[in-house]
Image (cartoon, rainbow, N blue to C red; front, side, top):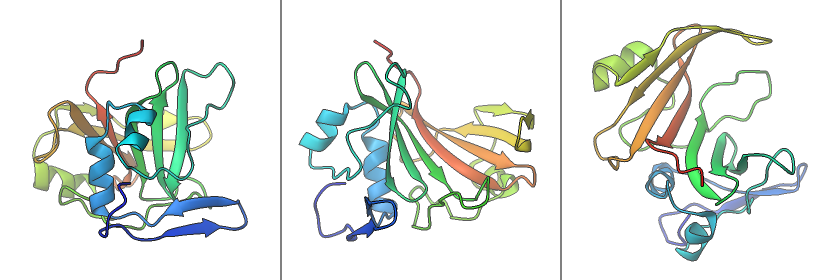
Length: 179
């Protein structure tokens, strides 16, 4: 994130030999506002991205990713390294999954349910019904919103578990430019 006094220190995971930023709501907001920029533009603007540059699972991957803090993953389009999605994990899907424990912007909380989201933000722009996934079982579906204070080219997707608790928050661009 930008080098500024409002940011918490970096910590190092000695076991996995990885540096992370101790994230907070301001840093998450800065990342959301950086959607659509390239990795190079983000670094040039002063954002500190300790696990960069982003990497693909395979040499010919269409998407690249990087982790900036436990439970926080940035998704990029491979051909132009454009930042297109920010994934924040709030609950474990599988035992041992990293979860984000910092604060969130846009009046979001670390523990939310679909009922809380609906009462706070009203009807979603889009919804996807619960569905069954191989290996993990039932999910609770998703709801997509544009939240007050977010740039108009950005949406947020709330992914629910079978108990209708928010397990992941995904900030993403409305339109993806895959050039």
